[in-house]
Amino acid sequence: MTPLKPLAEPCPQYLPNDEPACRKPHPFVDVDRLSLHYGAKLAFQDVTLSISKGCITALVGPSGCGKTSFLTCLNRLTDLIPTCLVSGRIMIDKLDILAPQTDVIRLRRRIGMIFQKPNPFPLSIRRNLEFPLREHGVRDRTQLGSAIETSLRDVGLWDEVKDRLDSPALALSGGQQQRLCIARSLALAPEMLLMDEPCSALDPISGGIVEDLIVRLRGRYTIVIVTHNLAQARRIADHAALFWVHNEAGRLIETGPAKQIFEEPHDPLTAAYVSGMRG
Amino acid sequence: MAETLSRSQNPRERLAFVLVWGAAAVVTATFCWLLGDILWHGLSRLSWTFLTAPPESAGRRGGIGPILVSTFLILGVCLAVSLPIGVGTAILLAEFTSDQGLFGRMTRRSLDVLAGVPSIVFGLFGNAFFCKMLGLGFSILSGGLTLACMVLPILIRSTEEGFRAVPANYRISAAALGLSRTTTLVHLLLPAAVPGLLVGLVLGVGRAIAETAALIFTSGYVDRMPESLLDSGRALSIHIFDLSMNVSGGDANAYGSALVLVVLLLLINGAASWLATYGLHRKIATI
Ligand SMILES: Nc1ncnc2c1ncn2[C@@H]1O[C@H](COP(=O)(O)OP(=O)(O)OP(=O)(O)O)[C@@H](O)[C@H]1O
Ligand SMILES: [Mg+2]
Image (cartoon, rainbow over all chains, first blue to last red; front, side):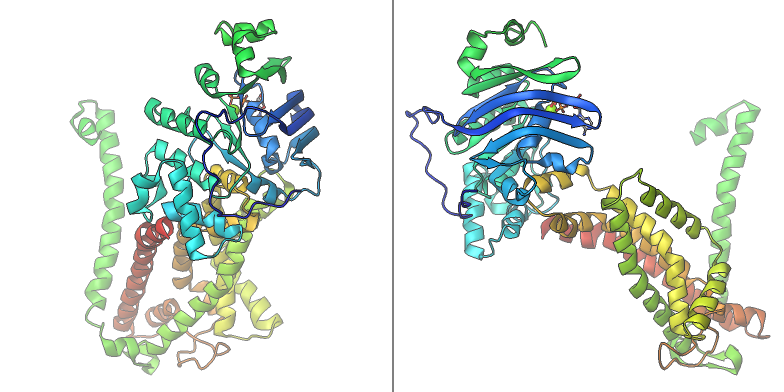
């Protein structure tokens, strides 16, 4: 495993706007014939996919085709479900993450995850950010303070909450809570972010703010986002992958640059799905 | 609802109205009568001397000082033993065993049966095990340990419910942030399970402090001031029992002691619900 980036170091500057952040994509994650069973039930089968560094990859497809299950393989949250069996291979940055000796704590620190429903802890705003940092070994007060400020600024929440860092996080609005959760992940200086329908539980305005935020994070993080909103996928994704349900098991039916998937899809199912005729 | 029932012309509904309200009235009236009776007879006995002085002439005169001390000591032993074991077992049941697994099912079933066992049975068990087998004799230690056995099932089950009531997404989001299972348990799940723990504690302590049968056989009824945990000590409930049943002319002091017991129970209840709503909750949300 490559050495971890030190925590709480100042974040890299945003890339200049005129330079496309994911111009020369090179693979960061390589998924090879991945299948997942919940007990006897096959959730998805034989997914082979490459995810490029610094790009936004959108996973789309009808409900129940295994998008969430696929995401949870990438940070081994599947370990939490006793009946869950994963086979195949996932290489992240040359590390075989499904190998039993992989340190999942370190892995999950490198890969942040954002859920559909904002899920801050029932602690103060400050403690929500500080608690994971402390657990990963950042103890110094000033270092903690600056990490908190930087990550809150990153998600555009600093000006809204800087005067009430010690009030409960659950008192924030849904959109603010979601941005707080993103900040909580960013504070750990991850390399990749997994987002499972991060805007779909929010009102359109908050959803828009979070979407803009995701676009701003392009280039600094490798982002995999699941979304049911095809217009959103079309707006923000560099790459897209379409999952489908075949014989009650999910499959990846087409993957490629977002432009190609949405404008000149090869597979007739993809064409029907992106034009809104099926799914 | 009540209004529509009382105005209804249908005789069956009117009967239902009378029965429902009658039952509620009987329950409330009984409680008020009980409380009123204790207050009426007991209030005149209550004074600082009563709370601190030793009993005289088998409790007819004097106070309940040593008895209060014994009661608190017994309760202290009970809590010191049952809290750690109770919370530990609850964590094991809620977080480390599956709902359907044999071990979890058997443990839960045994606890539910134990929770319903009459206290006199615990008393006999405590006498045989702690007093005789372990050689602790009639002592505060034996009494406290017996009470701990009695309180544990309630404490474990309601703490376990507290853990199960914590939303699953705390565990998932904590894992996704790379937090270890222990950290998640100590810093997120335990605070969130505190309300369940408090409910169990109030029920348990309520049962323990009012216990008579289990203590007669274990802590005994010596009414001197205890000098160590191995001394026999008389609990408040036993004192009341003794005064009203075995000591002629002890009724006045029995009422006084009963009043103290009721006030203690109300205080414990109040403190726990205050802790659950204000103290801990506030503290946890904003640390
Ligand atoms: N914990 C679980 N245990 C058993 N089966 C599960 C579990 N989680 C998901 N599944 C099943 O696996 C399949 C894929 O589910 P998954 O949640 O990955 O779909 P999805 O594409 O994310 O759907 P959606 O778009 O509705 O979120 C579904 O058939 C689902 O019922
Ligand atoms: Mg999903």
